[in-house]
Image 1 (cartoon, rainbow, N blue to C red):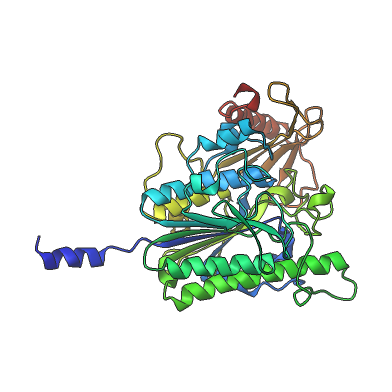
Image 2: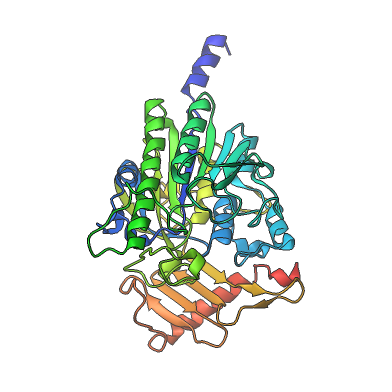
Length: 440
């Protein structure tokens, strides 16, 4: 091959895309105009949805922060490695250390990698019980030490394991840090994981962002301000990509980690979020706890302005981004998620996930003496239009037709016992492949 033909072949190859993953934290499913809300304007999320595909039935792997983020970062059911809740003991955190993260895979492919914002996979304090982001594939990171933080100075942060305090409102600071990484990394493929902790409690927002009508409570006005600030900083990221001429070679995913907390959660995590028309909130397996807003945008590769109605999972994010980067799916510890791109383009007409399962199982006590928290052993399975859910060991399964009843108001278990039996058996087969924390 001549030098000219070699250079021509290189030019013909598509450049590996830049990858940006944006997370919000505890946002209410019913608080976005994308799903019919009108109270809080989110023009930049609206803009991202117009540029890409909006998912009407995207599901988190868990209704709470730590396991949901493990599902996102590994592309696997976290139940496979024994994580069912927000556990912080060294034993449980080390289980995650055995897994390979998306950032680790992308770094091996030559990507510059950065985490900005919330990690929450190394415990709730610093130094952590488990691996820090730089040990999990990130060249650099800046963020909070655990699952929540104050928003105004002197909120405590860490940059590459060194403590400092935020110089400004935290959401604005994270937006600037994200833009800074994009600008300095534009000459090579990069992966930016931008994990906003907004609008997770505590409720704190700049006065100029707080909004609402005369009947809106002060807390709700503050929550709205937190969402507006986050949306503004998503806009800064989108503008930086546009100004640098990177739009057509940048794949952007936006997703919420789990359902909104509303005022139905422990006091430390209440934020007035609304999940209507879905039932339930963060911490439970009703739709309001696990169905999340999600957008994927990549000009020329993902249909623009489309609403995708089939069931997908946040486990699909890692396989999708890895495939876009030219990576091969792992053969050891394989993904449970799928590459969504063939489904979005129509190349694969099948359903991405015929079945999805969940188990939310809070534990108490030291290792070897742990026990499930009474009343909090939630299990669910979704197959097609049907969802089976059981809220505790001593309760019956409930069955809902989500096509006809997305708010889960009419239990059909007594009317369709054969479906209950089939789904219970399917759930048992799935559960047999998972790992109980007590066995590790």
